[in-house]
Length: 185
Image (cartoon, rainbow, N blue to C red):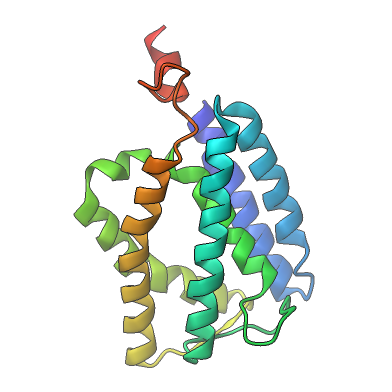
């Protein structure tokens, strides 16, 4: 049940961010993602560790999306506070995504090459979908699409390394995630 709630909460944050930005209301997504993150942190047994993961993902997202914008692969119209940096609504999307790394997407840890493949294919698709919905402009040149794919292919193992390092879903004994421990009882 917790995995389903985590997945649905992530989707609410993702769509709230993208549709809010597309509608000229970039604050909508951050409000939803803040609630998602608060819910996530209230459930995990080690919220401080998980908070470090969420903040690390936000910092990584700031760098990656700012780099992609600087290279002209994506262009953001709304939510840009500091020229040259990614908008706040897309940075908080990284926080929302990070809430899934030790929960419903935890299974991907066991398959590092699949995680890379997920990034290579999923990264460009997510940006294309965001562009389709009107949240950003995507440079659809082969160089930009390949660049986005490579960024995400590289960032997925980094995110999973961070997720392992700052896994706040472990029980106090540190031996099993809470959502798996609940199934054993």
